[in-house]
Image 1 (tube, rainbow, N blue to C red):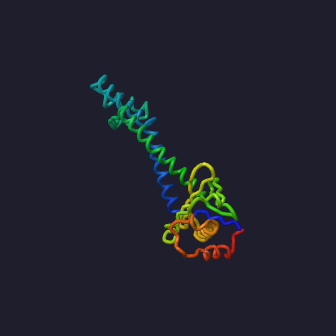
Image 2 (spheres, rainbow, N blue to C red):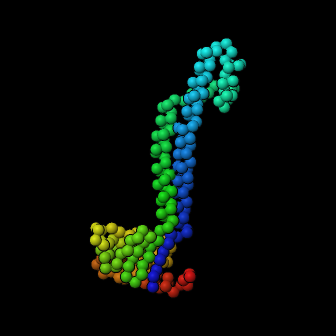
Image 3 (tube, rainbow, N blue to C red):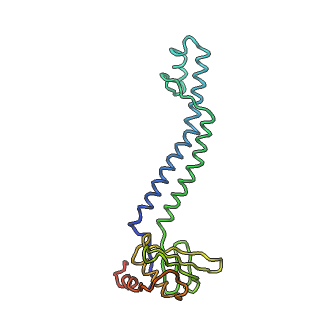
Length: 215
């Protein structure tokens, strides 16, 4: 019997926090980009034009010349333009360079995290990342936190060096995750399991296998 555990809906709070960070970072990055490409160059041009008009028309710049120049360029004729410099534009680019990768990483993490799953069939542990680990290739299981936290790491070596798969019954659906761990535990020798007491997990597997299955 195949057992598969997807991300538990109750743990979507973590995904939603990541999504909020991603959206906030992307919005701020877009703001920085707009300032660097549009807003700040326009403010620099407006301020330079304002100073030029004041210098060239010292008598009537306020009443006639500046309002005319401002209206031609879409600037507010009633206010002195805000002073900005090329250094301010550089600052916006630097902020964009910092924030945009953070937003991209968080958004990518949300997409990957939402699609995560682990599963087992009769002889193999597999994950959404394409990892397939025959039980006889499992080198050890770190189960020291299993009884208290529902967390275990399954280490394996399929020819490219040792790696591991995390089993977490808080992150994944609890019943199938517990059943997955129980099947793996029963499939490997006891000397490859670290930190697990004599408590028997068979009830977890039985609880999952006897419950009605969707589909």
